[in-house]
Image (cartoon, rainbow, N blue to C red; front, side):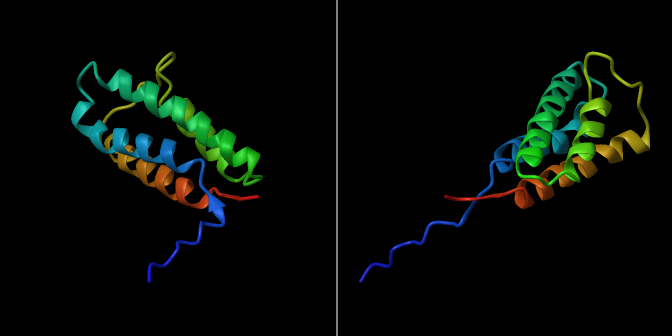
Length: 110
């Protein structure tokens, strides 16, 4: 007898952008001194705004300022001159924030 799967009660719209941003951020320390880091900045800034939008839609407003800060810090248009150990450590820290937000920002299915 085959069991039928019960669909999840929740959908996590922020999970996919969170996973993509986390992957980019985990690779980022290796790219800090290359021109590819600009691509990482674009990816992270755009996905931070997308995750902030999902958080706002789900009324989890405490995430919005967190991702606003990430979007500004990784902004490729007017980059903040950041370097050193603190900036290198900020990459995986932001990745973890994206993963936690992606897992916790959820909407109940209709």
